[in-house]
Image (cartoon, rainbow, N blue to C red; front, top):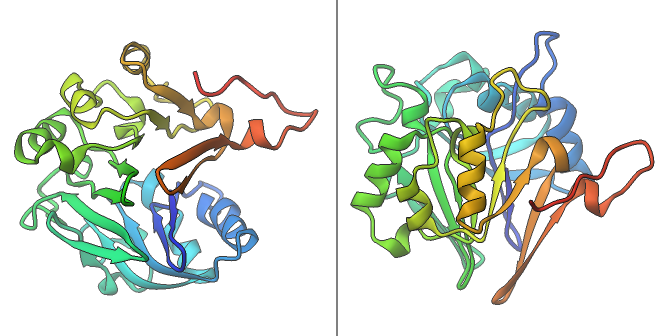
Length: 255
């Protein structure tokens, strides 16, 4: 996920590394950044150390300059790259503001971040980004226990978001009714690898978003999904719908 304000940029996770030695970081993200004119990342965040989230980050950092670095992965984890010691733990309560846009980390607790005895998914950095009127929630791979903890601990305003990055790719361990009722998103993005071996998203999870009236996007069908805010309004666009080509399908989106 790429978050851009008027003069700052944040990259949240960097996709997988591949058995060939290449990665989504080098083959997808870096070309995107160059095309978008992003030469410097003010902050990079690796939600946790699983290879589908952290695997592309070393290639990104080898080709793009970055400022602050935060993660819930253990210190010196090899997927953080050669400068692993420069990464700071992400923890709830951390906040900052860029160009009037507020960033707030909601999870994990400080004592849990980077703790190898806790499952990596459960430690995922959860980040809320909010303008004066619109917001998005980035959730990594948290599961239902972490979702419940967030809902029980935080006020409704603290977790509400217009746009939700679906936890754990829409697996059966995530997207509880309590989370959807608290966040009440207009739209949700399922980040999925095409033909992924885990068969994400699980059918009942996918349907639960539909029953809740949430607009659903799946990146294995649409490609990149972009949310652009302007004042009180926002627009959502999907790459394959916005950039049609005769050699590829253009499935309906949202669903």
